[in-house]
Length: 60
Image 1 (cartoon, rainbow, N blue to C red):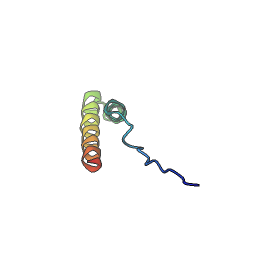
Image 2 (image 1 turned 45 degrees about the horizontal axis):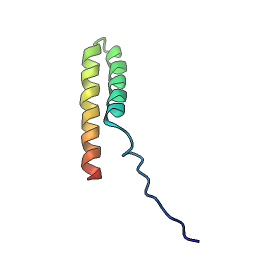
Image 3 (image 1 turned 180 degrees about the vertical axis):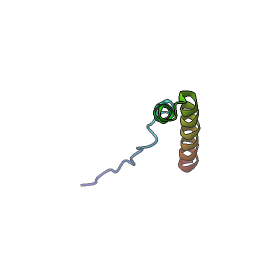
Image 4 (image 1 turned 135 degrees about the vertical axis):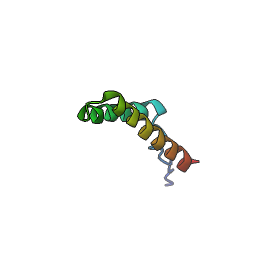
C-alpha cells in the first residue's frame, strides 16, 4: 500500500494581509504601552513587512 505524501505548506497559506494585520495589532498593543499608538502601528508595519520579506526570500 503506497502512501502518497503531500508536502505541507504551513506558512505558504498565510496571506499577506493576515500576517500584516496581526503584526499591526501587536504593534498597537505595544504602542499602547508607550502611549503612542501611531508609533506602535509603524513598528508593527515594519516588523510585519520584514517578516513577510524573509518568508518570501526563504520559500523561493
